[in-house]
Image 1 (cartoon, rainbow, N blue to C red):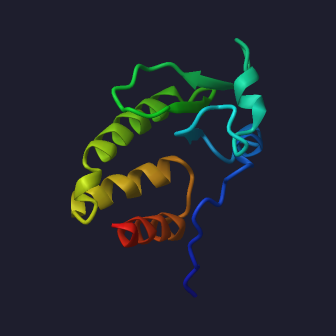
Image 2 (tube, rainbow, N blue to C red):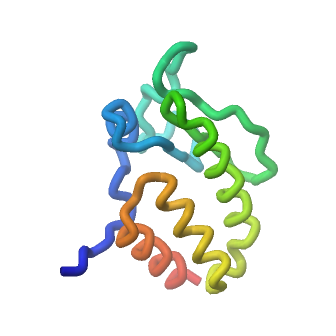
Length: 126
């Protein structure tokens, strides 16, 4: 039986999923005081199990990436894939862009059905 994908299945519960070890990376492209972002992401301290990836971004939008302790390399991989995807977004119907989005979605802990739903939704916006 095929599972129906959903866009945004982790919205509002990212922090709890990370604490439970069910999600390694969270990404927000909005300010951290946005109502959809758990305020606990803004109050992290040294030694916490969730860490903010501090990287400069050339993207003209907020980029906030958080990862669970021990998952820094995975977060760095996500960061580089995100940049590659965003710079190639105009080519969103290309196989390369779709493959990057699949990797990004899987790194964020989404099911393949959720990733496919996102890609389909994004392409319909174009």
